[in-house]
Image 1 (cartoon, rainbow, N blue to C red):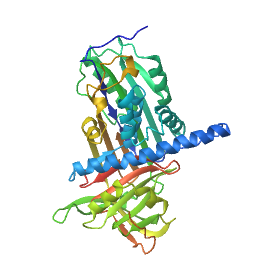
Image 2 (spheres, one colour; image 1 turned 45 degrees about the horizontal axis):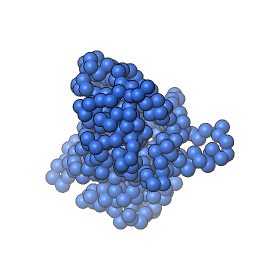
Image 3 (cartoon, one colour; image 1 turned 135 degrees about the vertical axis):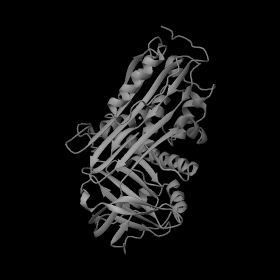
Image 4 (cartoon, rainbow, N blue to C red; image 1 turned 90 degrees about the horizontal axis):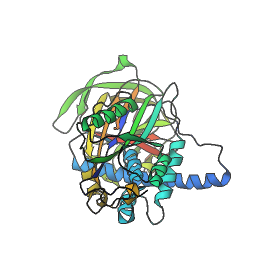
Length: 417
């Protein structure tokens, strides 16, 4: 059956929703029941996903941070990459190439199929829950019930474990409520009323949610949390609730950049990394992050440094990002324009992405972290001080250590509770 041809006004509405993710233990594991040759192929594809996402993550994050120099930023670049990779399954020609290149997947060496299979392998590596942690990733396509989507596109989305959900966008209020209920359920109630409205001419909403909840491996004692100064800048000092704990942590001081790096692990294979620049060195840190030096720093960290008195503020943070604006600035333009080629979605030449947003939330306290969303210098490994105070603007990330995947990245200028 031939797909229905839509007028230019028919649009794809693209939504990225990163659900609240408590920074806690999450386990990524390799499946042991693959054949040997499949392991080699899967490992290669996984490495391609990890390397591409790492480059994109810090390109996107530093761009966003530079655009908002005095604001808190929190995002999940891997969720953006996964969502737009889903869209690339229905893109053709320059539209597809631009998406893949913009996500830092070499379109010449890595086809859309390889990217899709790489994400399929990554998703299979995730354990869903245990008594200490939860990591839940959900992909969905809310599809206009009267639209004929191509079978290949829907089949390809299965590699992302995406479900197709029939929706009547002509009844825009019902469609909005349907999507908002889905997001609220997938984010354990952390993100409510994500959409304020839905255009009746919407053809589809592509959605990715990430929910992450976990506990610190060594929790902070609430009785030791105390009011302390946080130096927002040279002239602004605020009082924040500061958590403190003495223990053993992996640390490093990056001399050329002038920053301290400390790893605070959760139960399992997930860690939070706090990067605290010396006074006046925040811009040096951001330039180093743009050049993707963080992975090298982490790999070369000291195994453990005992007797560290660590102080970290309790904080909550939320961010909303207009992805259409920010990705266009990074070169992913065609998919949002009237020149978009998304003929792999319905067969129609009249489709484009009309909107793309990301919302993310994070909360850090003594027991762990909750976060949601509905990216050079030499390393000095010795002479760390016995006390590390995270008492000025810093960068933090949440990383799965075995797969070396950065799940969330944030910049905190001014803590809020």
